[in-house]
Image 1 (cartoon, one colour):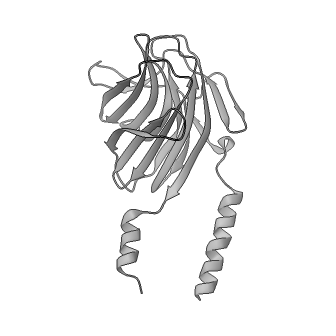
Image 2 (cartoon, rainbow, N blue to C red; image 1 turned 90 degrees about the horizontal axis):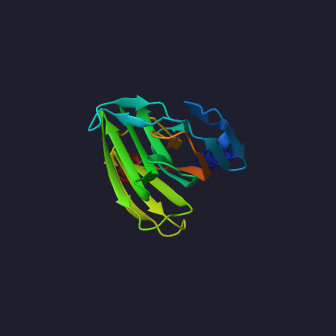
Image 3 (cartoon, rainbow, N blue to C red; image 1 turned 60 degrees about the vertical axis):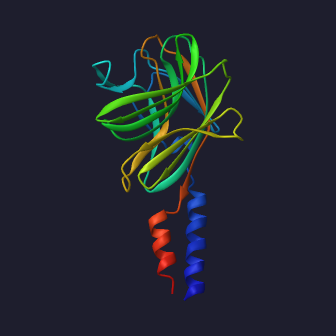
Length: 217
């Protein structure tokens, strides 16, 4: 029986690999006027006067920027490389993890007052905003998000080798999320953003794994 079960797992793994995630299989929320996919690279012309924000500090709610996503349940690690031709205040590009219009996290790079900032907005009914100011322009940034239980850990890197945590944020556990690439241009006429090497890797559920360990035959 154990051999049969192992064979079934291998067969399922082979099927999953054959149907692995590609950019072409993902979906648009607020599709921009122009975009293209080449290999593992997505390029978009970011919609002018678009953003994601809810209520707090500024007193308005917007939910109209382009977001290219796939849907995942459970725990995972997600990573993407981000570049952009940032031009004006609040131009931004990065990764978004979203349950609905009242619950989402967007994180990446944002151009504010002539400087590049690592930026994270966490929204649960209302939005908050945290930034890490950079002392120089950067050509590209890598963002990595790890979902474990009811937390999302967010990391950044300039070389895809050394990662530094920039935020640990709450998000409801055991709830499917949409995860992918977003860009916004709240204050300008649009810019070009490029994303590459987007990948989501399933992580075994911690609670289930511990239960199986505790109840091993």
